[in-house]
Length: 223
Image: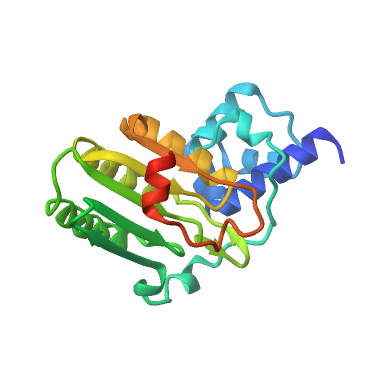
């Protein structure tokens, strides 16, 4: 396989992990769809400027784009995933005594669902002490077809707004990630929102990382 073909496959696998079509990726990056298609097929020698555009649209660092972490080329079937009850894809709890909100995302979310979730989380946060809130966000089960899933651009934009709202409330934020891809996305999101000052995005390449129970007290004490 030559370098152009390998680059094209990498672009396609990251596009599929974000559940973007070629049309969507092209439109968001300001590139022509036929151009994106030819890059994915290894037919075009893409410029550094266009690599930057595509990476920003996929919300990954250029350094991560060339990382060895690789994924399946199977598409994510988002429509069937969103038919699962929301309770199977998102849950949260509030521990008033410890000023802790913990939530778990275990699948894809629609924009309407994120709007409702955002309102619920803000309401939960208002029960706690301003500036002393701890957030534990568990995204490890964001999987589809055995492959990690990351947030679509429009969902990422809503999470960014939510993080900005949470920033003055929060003392510490820990995000558990399902891949280096998600860890990279979460760090970029935290940088844009400003919550990076109090956030740690964690991922470990351990056999039981995606399934082991996490003690919030231990996590907040050690990170």
